[in-house]
Image 1 (cartoon, rainbow, N blue to C red):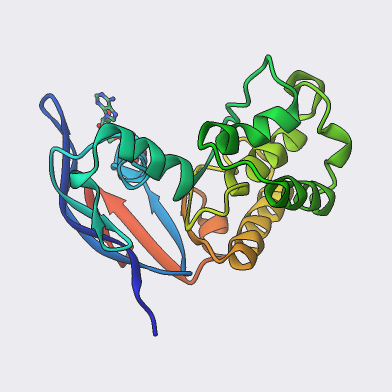
Image 2 (image 1 turned 90 degrees about the horizontal axis):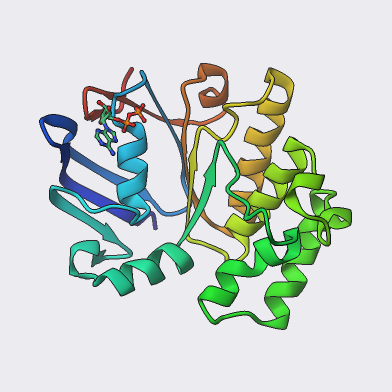
Length: 223
Ligand code: ADP
C-alpha cells in the first residue's frame, strides 16, 4: 500500500522580512518521483533544503518515516542528512583535495558505516555509469559530466530513502539533460528511493508523472 515517506505540515520559512515558504502541506509518497517547477525565488530550494535537514523551518513540521525532524538534535539531524538523504546539486561539491573514490566513500566514513558491501556496490555503480577509470583521479582531472556521475554515486552510496536534486541538469545541454534525468529516474527506481527534482526546465519535468509547482512560497499540484 502507498505510504508517505515525508509529510510536510504548515511549513513556513522566513528570512528576515522575506517569506520563502508559506504554509506548505504535502505528502511525498514512498517510491514516487516528483518534479517541482517554479520561477526563480518561488521557494523551491528552500523547500528542498528543509526536506533534507540542511536548515530548520520557522514554523510547521516535517515528518520523515513518521519522525518529526523538529524533535531531532543537531547531531541527529546530521545523521538524518547522512543516512536518509542523498543530495545532487547543479554544482558538484566534490572535495578538490581527495580522489573520487574517497569523495564517494566520505559519507560512509563520516557515518562510520563503511563496509565491503558498500565498496562493492559503489564499484558496480561506477562501472554501470562508466566512470570506474575515474575513481583514483582527482575531481579536477574529470570532465563536468564525469564529475556529475561521481557526485551521483556519492549521493546513492548509502542507499538513501530520499534523493533530493536541485537543478541537477542546470548546466547541461538538452541531450545530456535528458540523459541525466532518465538516469536519475532509473537509479531512484533501482535503489527504491523517493526522488524529488527541482527544475525550471519543463522538458525535464515532462518525464515525471508527479508534477508540482511553487509560486510565492506556496506549493501547488497544478501549474
Ligand atoms: P528558488 O529556489 O525557487 O529560486 P529560493 O528558495 O532560493 O527560491 O528563495 C525563495 C526566497 O527566499 C527568495 O526571495 C530568496 O531571495 C529568499 N532566500 C532564500 N535563501 C535566503 C537566505 N539564505 N537569506 C535570505 N533570503 C533568502
